Image (cartoon, rainbow, N blue to C red):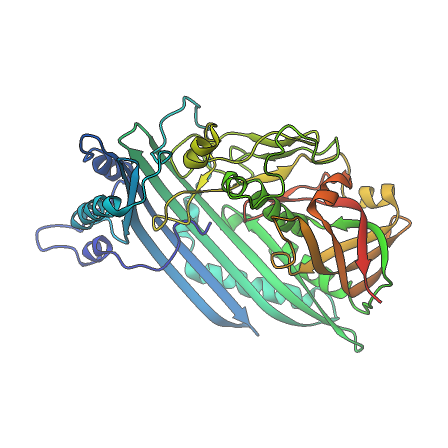
Length: 474
């Protein structure tokens, strides 16, 4: 939901707020019309692309029954790419005012003169894939009063405190939401638009039993604030904090680890960088050059599917305006493909997988996953623990990004969680490290849980059991 978010005050917004003496203030700019207009200004021998976006974002944090911080921002702007003579120029403005848009196009043209020539540079062209019809916009979010947002944050804080007598405090309780719209049009025939909303509640509980303290977090995510679940966020935070009370450092051993859904989602985020076409081109992926080879256990299938409406990264079009599609990356343990945008696809001699992503109108397209997920198995978490019997349920990790090397696959992170004995949760543990390599972990997956849940960040979480992992403790 971060795409396009950010604080900005545009000329057009100011004009709209001020109005004019001749009549009412102008309405919001039609994004598609504006993008078409800019693309239509392309000269002979020149490719022009306009990416136009606007969004809103609200963040509320409460502490001790009081509002600690509240921010609300609106942003809008345009990013223009010009490709001429295999040279690319880019410029952007945080405004949709006509004069600003014209200046951005002129600046992009000027920048193209100084760009490095690259025969693979060029805008996307329509590839005939039909866009998915996705309903990702909830208009009630825009009408939801700020006061109600504050009430939700206060409610999740109060519910977390009341969930268990051992909860002695709530470190933070947050409400956040965003609404985002974008349109893209190019002189090469691309024309697309999309919009989506999202919101969340989050709490971090502090548990104390007189012998020590532990923390745990819980959340609820939805497209509409009316669908947020205060009880789930508060209950999960309290349970995750209290069940770690009395945690000790475990003995070192090799065992099966059960990654909880948020941990698996973080791990998939790392894996998605390994499966980027740009990472493969730059030699920064240990999977580079291995398409068609067995890289995982035979029952593991990994897909990126932005057409799944349940995914918070769902969208009908990628950041270059191509219709998104279900991309199977690992199929039955065999590496099938990398994620490609137009540029990486051309350099690789392949077609784009419609996996272009942007940080907003301020950036050119990169490549990445939007809705990465393992195909779920048949068992929920408790059934999976019972079936396998012994191991460690990993509740949280530290150092996921600094402790994982996408180029070599080396994996070493700090963990806390609960031992599993005879299929049941047992004593809590902390101050431990699990280590392996991503290559070995893909090959040592024991089972994929059926408890998939979509989370913000481009990946789904589910319980994942991996055998033969080294646990370093006492």
